[in-house]
Length: 425
Image (cartoon, helix red, strand yellow):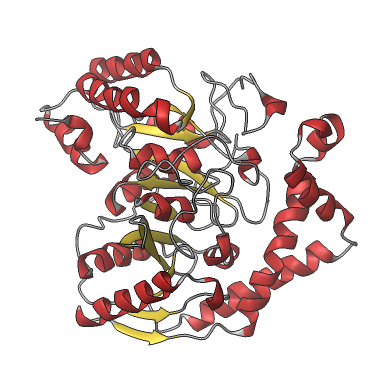
């Protein structure tokens, strides 16, 4: 085996089960990649090679311990880890060492995963970016808020990484970095031990190099059978095609990409029909900022009272707006979410999924802005699964993606149709 680090998660899992690869050898190959590029990319906020080696050696001594045996997982730094700092992207929490792992991390370790390190997040997974650069062009952002997770996966530092999504923080950085991003149905992966910001929106998901890799990791920690996306469905899908609730936000190359992908899907046998979003979905999208910012201001009540000077000005502006809203605003916005979710279920009757862009365009230049979540926030509010897959490149040679969206609970179908779409492309 020339380079174990080149294996996807599912490929590495097969080699580890077969005994043709050891966890220690795999760890050394991945650590070599980190050593070569981490100084430039800065995907990790905490990375300890000796800790990784110890975990891999223990995996070899124990033998097969679960479906994630010996596989490396990056952990976004809003998820607590007992053996690593958890600072949530904020100076307020610098040096904080939780007593326990978050549920998502503990479940991954129980399934045999090796924690590769803590990946950079924006401030509280919502505002000020960290220092992480895009592996495909370090002059560009990797997206956010799961910045380090997207960069670490794209650079081959780990097989998968946890992300979280409140607006577009899994799907958008995955698209910018040319990897697969899977935001499960709301609540699929337990949030205990996560620095939750928006109670109605925050969802833990997975970024990886392949759709099957996402299914492997998420299924193992959620206790769900997400199927094998490599096994093709018995038929082509019926897809609703939409540019989203703000078509004007799309770059020309993204609009052209969506048309090309739809044509490729039709040639492969899919039924693809243009879809105008119903008013209830526009209302749900419009309600998203109120839910996100009011709930986040509630979540940061201690920080805003005890450490206000260490909250960034951009985040303070949003939190102060959230706290200034009159009574009933949050309740009305949550009601708009509920109405949108019901309308979405009705609209998909007789259809398999929605096909829509993952981001407005390529990753923006510079590291000061992680991009616009306009292509994501509605689908997050609707609580269904979203899977983004690489689908082309833009004028600067950076990746473009499209996403498959289905109704809540239809995660297995979303993953299967996303893989089908990749084959069609």
